[in-house]
Image (cartoon, rainbow, N blue to C red; front, side, top):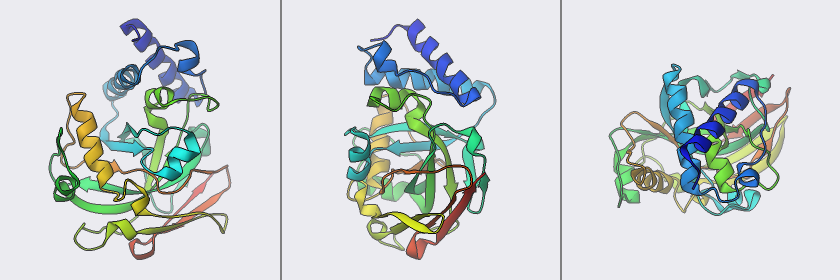
Length: 261
């Protein structure tokens, strides 16, 4: 395991990369013995520094919950990161590309919690009971660590590559719609690039919320009422550049659009 000094130094590097929109060498190339627990410790130091600087935590993101994403990254274990209030956009937003590194977009559902959710032993039914509503969302990936050869240790330390999210406006309770069958048609500049259905996330998108409650319990935490949880992508990531118009049609859950400027 890494020493506290190493963990703090890497968190400093990532904070500077976030500030300058830069990319640092892989952690696992420099510290081959780094573990998943080390990476969550790095993320935790970085998170606490962001909160101390005045940023407000509004939720968490889950990654690598679908076969599409696992195959795209070569990583087979889900992970999570945190989301701050200054990373949330509404549909129709113009998004400054320069804020991010290695910019890609994923298709997801987000869940707002009506009450706290804790593990261990949290089930899908527990998660559904705690969820207030589901809303479509796009996640913008933002990688501060070089992509080639990256492992889950690198990704987790880099706040699981989270950059921002774009929220739709259509909200549905879990008893109003079969969330497994929410579709997505993801387009860039008018051409469909990716399609998927929400059941690609662990068989049910809310299963990711249960996984997260159990995972954060290992770190002495729980999911709180009011938090937004990004449940994981059910398409592969789509690369975007300045000038791209992005649109995703979620069928009965509406459309999200944004433009990268």
